[in-house]
Amino acid sequence: MNRSNLGRAIGALIAGYALHAGAQTQAPNVATSAATQARQEAVSLDVKSQLQLQDLALKKEQAVWLKNSQTPLVAAKVQEIDQARSNIAAATRLLDGEPPQSLKDLKEKTETIRVVTRPVYGVCSGVPWANDQMTAWRSWRDYIGDVSSPLATVAKSVGVIFQYYQPDAAAKPTYMSVGATAFVVGKSHIITNRHVLQNYAYIDNQGAWRLYGKQLLVVSFPLEYSSCVTRSAQRDVRIVAIEAVGGDGENNDYAILRTEDNALPPAAPLAPNFNLTEGSRVAVIGYPSRPVSCAGADAGDDCTYLSEKQIDTMFRLPDSQIPFPAERIAPGMLLLNPSLDPQQFSYDSSTWGGNSGSPVVRLSDGMIVGLHYGGYGGDSEKATYNNAIKVDRIRKALADAGVTQ
Image (tube, rainbow, N blue to C red):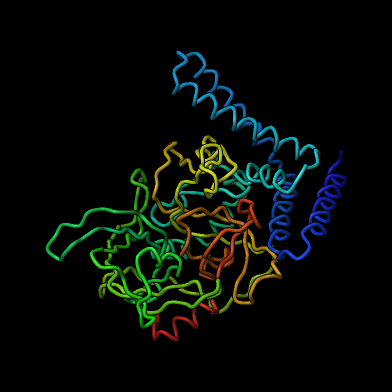
């Protein structure tokens, strides 16, 4: 089947699903559109050859493992590689013209393609730690390089939240958990998502938000990978109060938090307004957690179709290490999503748990244009696109709370 026929086959699959879906929301169609766009882009970028290189490297690694004694560890490693190679083979067949059998099949193969087309890079001294041997760097190098200075300003204002147990002010804090992302929006204020705050706060009988007692919340700015040749100076800043929280609804999924005075890094500039169109290039900067592969996940868990080896490939830095948490940047493109509230937008960067609360920047000038709040893919499907709140809504929320940059 040639490429035009493949496109028609996918279109027929989408149309058939839409008829079957009936009263469902438009979200599944957006997810399918994103997956189809990824396939079309992969053909134009000759992703097939890059997948072949990945498969060759996995084949060599597999041969080394098979020379070892067949212990449970060796068997597990061989199985991981088998799954990765199977996913690559399936994605290659899609690129060769094999029509997808279902939406799930399309999305599953698209995830493997996105490891190449929607990379995730580590950040050192505010700039991506990447070289021409890194996945897809040549495709994104110029777009990112042209705004390296403003991107570095944003990256240095993006932190990750840590929670500690502290029974009283004199007690030594005990580590509890690492959370999601937040970024600086004022001299003493940061912003993250409402659903992130719910891990650390509750609504009292009067309807006011309160931080849980006996906890210490700290934001690390920025937490760059320890093996960076050069790193930005890290500072840990304590969260002391809740300034404002959005109401119900995803267009209000924000929380503005107050920190100790005069401790934050400078706020990165917010764009005056959101003026992007479909296909505009953006990037999300934050602290993704390692995804869970569905192959080893419990029923109902949020997971990815990618194998453990493919997850390694996505997050591997130039020294082949895969640290978490560490600040990362993931480029992508804006998607058309008519089902969204006018104060939201969709885009297709690779994001994962932990990216909640991340700033989305436009690669035309490196300014912040949105607040990431989640990944979506339709009912019972894995995420294939992201949603964010537009900068216009963020600016209004900050103004209403009396927060200025």
